[in-house]
Length: 258
Length: 338
Image (cartoon, rainbow over all chains, first blue to last red; front, side, top):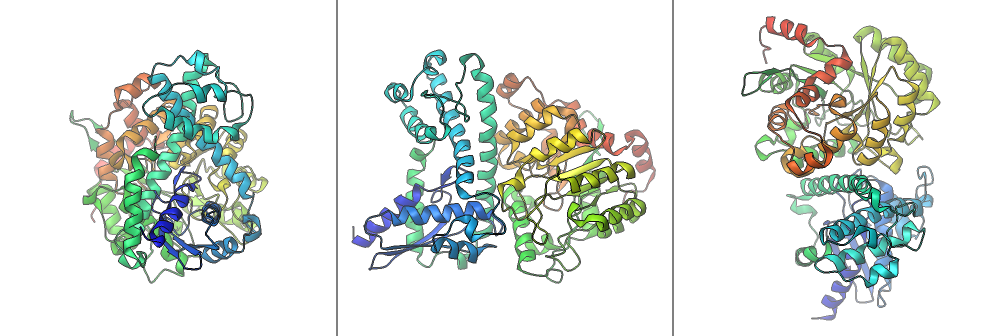
């Protein structure tokens, strides 16, 4: 593998950790990343696109800023630049992210709340989705709810799991700190204890969060395909790289998702 | 009219239709072009392949095509026009009450005309609402709370300015307030999707019906929670229903939630024509059954009775349509000519 290939793979892996806040899926997996350009001096430029011209500016901004930070964190990267294509606020987003501004500074008129608030709001929704997946797995595997709802975070980490269990647990625990509350592995998004007597009602409640995300995910993928599916002019300049990205996505798809 | 295998005739009121003009001649700027492209994306990504239109036809299909698709090829008996003005994007507007009124004049028994208002228009807007009520006898309005206006990036239905309009609606006999809560035109803040404001106005205006279009997706959880507490809150199936083709399992889950929380009396069918045509939607819906495991979990069935309510009876109730009388009236008419 040449140095360029190795560095491209590192950038791709870093971008793969960035999620769409509402869908809780990787921006690479969603097909948002259109190209990675790496200069010899360590400057990296990432191109990305969204399903519509109207996609919410705050989410777009958040993803762009997260991508920039993820790439800039690689030790050899001297400069990271993220360019959004074809969007109603293309200039505000590209220039704001390049200048390292907060969303509220880039959109002084419009921003009703700062990015941290949005990040927390959708972080908690993703917490609930990941928690639901893990709880359903534990129930299906025959674990006793009365016992696992009493576990501390450390206790859950030590619990013997098989199949998809360890992956679901890791995804869930990555979001667990957002909910705060008692030192229990399982709490509501408000940090409150979940009672085993009401677990089934609680599961039905958090399932609706997943229904929303599935609606968005299906729409976003469909709209992205309809927008760019058969327009070769919008493909990245280097088709080999795009193919590489997509192949990487396809092969990681099975392990990355619950 | 949809006829079941057993010969039963089901009266269909399509709660959500448009007649728009997004032809290149009417497009004012890049936003207008991107807006219709986005609509086309919905059409292309959620329609069965044999139902796909070309982008040219989609941009401007015209009144005769509409009548054909709804009432001749399609099963609709009546349809409710929901206007979308967008005068900043389109020279003569995208889909206005005035444009819709032309078809209403030609087919008075087929169409129900809805108006629109924006509480940010102040006194002038109230006068315009009065004029709509007087000229077109409107019984409903369609609102876009996320729409931008000058420096404003949307409004809430719980704003005092909105309450002035609701008071006027009550006075004018405009009973049905359709609110677009779902994929938005220019959603900048997440508040644009927020359904919490419905909770306040539905409590404060118990004589009005609030129909939340697209069921508040992607905020279904919040919407169901509010709807269970407010008996004058309804869910409109536009955009939700086409999932019956591409993701039937998902559609089943959403239907189960709606039946559980809202119940079959508060769900309204809408094709969102011309994004989708009613024929395939109604056919699929009529033959759709909820999987057993969901029925077991929620205890809710999608029965023939429920389907009849969703497809027509619920809309008839809130719009004051006497189905038997309307059937007789339409039966006496010659079939509509395209």
